[in-house]
Image 1 (cartoon, helix red, strand yellow):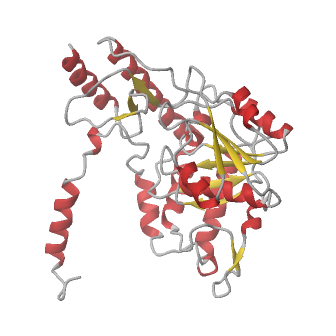
Image 2 (cartoon, rainbow, N blue to C red):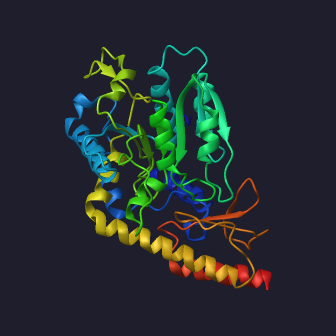
Image 3 (cartoon, one colour):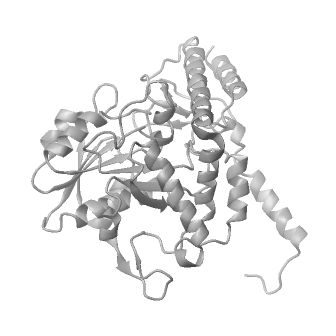
Length: 366
């Protein structure tokens, strides 16, 4: 820390220099986050000093968190769903497994069953909660094999996990089949829809993944991804409104005397930002955003395939993968464990950027 503070001009000149070192979003094709919507930024600024970790001091902000959960619960076919705003999918997944374990305290050596495509946050959760993680192979389309999932379940299983919009290939696991399996075993079934939760409901033909399926217990969704909120904004929803109360611990010196969240201090700003986008755009607006992203993905696929760069699989959401060994500078893509090029057609990836990438990559492979 400096002995004497620097001038505002000097400080922000330094910050501007560092900001220019970040990758320009025009060339970022690998991220599941995006440039926040202007209404999210405006709402975020209004609520920057709020702390949902002490909600009695910020009752208005706390009521907006409840409204966000209600909006998402209704979108996921259960307007009475419980839940709260998290920092994102990692926290939501940890909390879901924490809840599943607490509900089965009589099991000495608990395990969970997840697909090979599960997000790395499940490994963190298992390390923290002392859970055995059993991974299920994927089928030829990179979806969880429901039959093999059932074979992994035993008397020590506390949770089954399915993914709606996998990080690497944009696939939706057979959630309906998994929900039936979970229901038959009276098993906690968590759906990681961190990405797909803000895509699937707005598709022309939505894939069943939410509380409309009787076996689904909880859902993770990240408004800071396709919901275009400011970062960080995730949510964990539960079918039973009061289920999270099971995780309560005493917080005697706060305005509320018990708390079930993982984080203590929780920013209200991105939560209100997430609600702002949903209410500003509505179903029609979100459908238009998702439709545009899907159309861009289709154009990307068609354009690259004209140069012999073939897709790895037909995705369910706006994540495209290709058999491709390299891309030209300054484009930023990522690569799956299987070595496929991965591109996420987020709202900031406009059609002109798709055309520019096709042209630059095509010339490289021509």
